[in-house]
Amino acid sequence: MDGSIPPKTEKGTGAADAPFYLAQSDEREVFRAAADNNLPILLKGPTGCGKTRFVAHMAAQLERPLYTVACHDDLAASDLIGRYLLKGGETIWVDGPLTRAVREGAICYLDEVVEARKDVTVVLHPLTDDRRILPIDRTGEELEAAPGFMLVASYNPGYQSILKTLKPSTRQRFISVEFDFPAPDVEIRVVAAESGLPIDRVKPLVRLAGKLRDLKGQDLEEGVSTRLVVYAATLIAQGMNVDRAIRAAMIEPLTDDEDIKRGLLDLVAAVFG
Ligand code: ADP
Image (cartoon, rainbow, N blue to C red; front, side, top):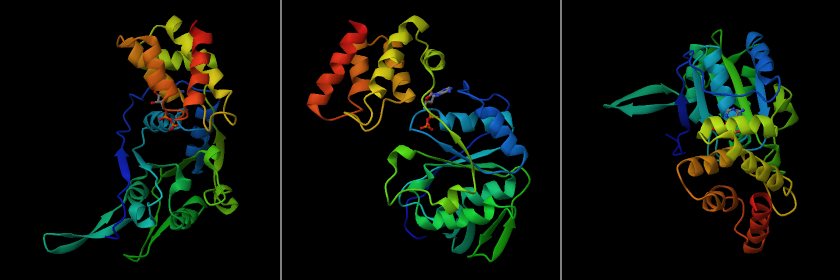
């Protein structure tokens, strides 16, 4: 063990009952084409705009198992590949999520890949060209990806800094699809479906979200995510007072600055007043 935090991994079922996903554009067709041609794909876009849901939906549609890894700044290549563990006095090799996906022909989704340590990208390179191999230094194996293996990564260009950006040598190995918050008519349907709140009551929440997003780069670092709009609508659908729900789900998560908060509450009043 190298002592780093193990990655959060989920294994999807690949069942035909795909999680609900409403397309923003032609992203499903692009994903399918990438899957058919063994091409890795990079999803760029702000947090909470539907990238993870999209991958879960596509994996189920394609009936491929899915391994999702939420990357963080302590995530090392060994967390993805695997490690030797002591079990009952014996040392055994345990595959990491990337290795399992390579062996099984599954989709491996690296969420927020720029967060991971530098050695992770080195591991990805031979998997993202036509060799499709994963060298495992510790066991001496060189795994060839099983048919169906697909590498999907996401990142949020908004968080870019000099230290945390994808190098051209890495990003030019992926097909890229740009995501943004859904257009209002799509977002209204998404929020209504996810929360159970009637469309008419969702509409002003989505209007407010649009106004909050316009403040990105001025008062706010990031606009409000679709995820937060879903949370607000869910609280309202459960009977919470609208003002309280908006404050808890769409204002407080955006800023700690009291002056900015007051300005945001004025916006709420303008939309709902
Ligand atoms: P990201 O991975 O971009 O951070 P998620 O995929 O976790 O965002 O999306 C957050 C939530 O927003 C989802 O759980 C879902 O409720 C909702 N959502 C956003 N976009 C869509 C969409 N197009 N279809 C269905 N649900 C969506």
